[in-house]
Amino acid sequence: MELRAHAKINLHLHSTRRRDDGYHELRTVFCHLDLHDKVFIEPLDGRVELLSDTRLSVEQDLAGRAALALRQALGRPELGCRIRVHKTIPAGGGLGGGSADAAAVLRGLAKLWQADEATLFKVASELGADVPFLLDGGLALARGKGEILVPLRTSMAPLSLILLFPGHPVSTPTAFSWMDEDGLDHDEEGPGKLKTLLGALGGSEPGAVIQSVYNAFDGCVSRRQPRVAAAMQAAKAAGLTPLLCGSGSTVAAFGEGDFEHRGLREFNPQRASLAGFSGAVSSCGTKR
Ligand code: C5P
Image (cartoon, rainbow, N blue to C red; front, side):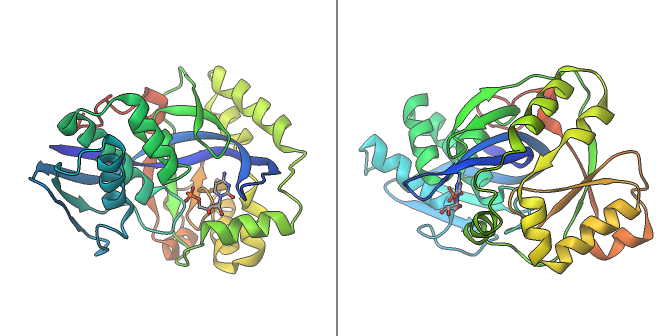
């Protein structure tokens, strides 16, 4: 079985409060990208094997952990599988690469091991905040840690963007601690900006969507990571609108500007598109 594990970006992200469990209560709009890893799954008796470009072990890699967690949740220790992961999505870039692989593994194993949707979703939520969205991808508004999802629709064609790689991964917990330091754990501007984006997604003007993207991590991360600030500045100089991907460090740049601009070259620019505008990844997560 071959599956596509799609990257995601957050077209909007803000925190309303810090929760007692240490997580942030988020309001975010997820969209999957055409950029994807490939995941191959074969049946195997009794053991879970993983061969990934990450070179991590089954127990360390989120893709392997997804298989082990699903087997445990099903209470069927005799189940097994062989998983291979070909990485294209860069790690530590805020594009949800590890979560995408885990979600694809869950989708594939749900077929192989006949797991129901509720079990799948519970295991996904426990693996990480981005995993439940990536089970189906598409375009969705999320609350909670990111796991309470409401699907969104837009009639707009998928927007093109360019991904810029500043070259320094940013750890997600560290980025959240910067958000707290900057007082953005209770983001007062966030709700208004979210409303504007949802309105723009309901319209037919790509420019209106681009003007209303917002990520509360933009300022907190770029103030502390000069390379991220430089990538954002280069995007602006090319006439593009920059947006941090998740907690960074990848910067997405949108707009009608110059994708070939000289100033972008040092950030290994890569074209991508907001594939989630066209709907979910096919329900079994397999190749479309
Ligand atoms: O769930 P995930 O493993 O992706 O989260 C990584 C870290 O990011 C968490 O341990 C937490 O520190 C932070 N986080 C958060 N609030 C969220 C999601 C993640 O504080 N909603």
